Length: 468
Image (cartoon, rainbow, N blue to C red; front, side, top):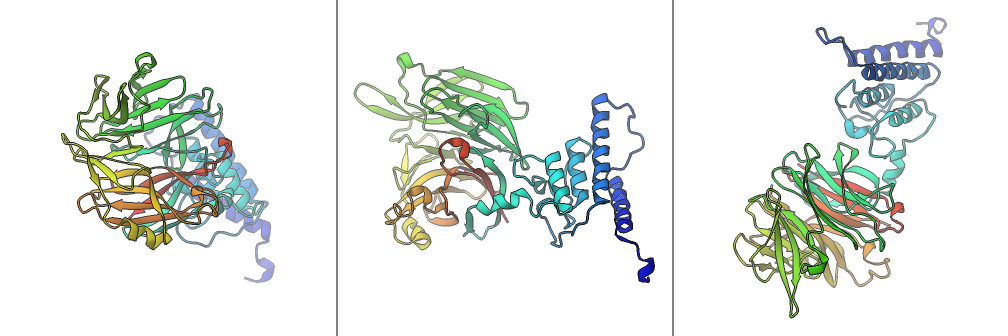
């Protein structure tokens, strides 16, 4: 074609707009036999979406862009075609309006890092497509991510699931459907804690946690049993609750206010909670104070009857972390001891001394004084216990304190007591792992926070280590 008869820039844009319009229409075909009676609200949603698509085409008619050349999933590429363009923005709008059920690459939809996919993300994609902005906001957020070095070859990578959270801590995976729940501070309402659910990259508020009384002290511990019932223990200076929720319906199954009355209180605050898959009861690590001594126990809670019962095992220490394996064996640990406590069903407590912990940790950080266990989880897909923590090195004060030390995730074989490395997190800023859990396939989920004050300045995150 001669230069004279080549389409000019506006003709090219018009042709491209028509082609893209045809692609958008093809993405949402009209099916014969569908009930034509549409509710007023749904009609307005569809009208709004069609108007937004028209706006997309109008913007394309006055702007140029360069398609992303990378193949595979990239930020903003919700249809996984290797390009970030108006098609992706239109799909996000259709998903927001309920015209389509899902996105092919739904994790790419949240381009501004607010843990939601909506019209704001669509607008940013349009601006990026029109070269009105040079980068999508999440790209700058990702610059602040910790370095995650995977040392276990059974994992193929890591993934950021949520960011911009306020001090996320405990995290738990629902064994029924592998859905993920975690505890974090609320954005509005001072320092109340709430329980949130991750749906793809969307963060959904589900249940209340600890309140915000004077003293600014809250504690919220969570666990989920094989029935999909979520147990939440919350404690402040002025109140204490046990609540059990149906994760499917969101209904409250049982609620007990001040289960351990102060006037005749024998129990110290709960240290940790976990669900036993054998009886679907929830267990709490605690202690009982008597005039002569402090006795340490596991306390079970039956969600069917609402009854509390003391476990009769002996030699138990009140640990800050606990999990159960598939046989009903409990594992407990915390930073006060460089070992794990194991309680088989109907047996007394025993101690697991690690065979090669020092060799493994020294291979990662060099010489160190002690290893502090900050948390643990039972990986029932691999019959092992995961622990995470940090090694106190001689120069940790020079680095800014323990918050600036690398955080190490390890796996422990409960039979041989042999330790193997899983991953190391390092960062130039303060970093803590708030909680960790494992799904049925062996994928690891964990929260991180920067331990910042005030809490509103915290940039907490949720990560996933992806199993091969």
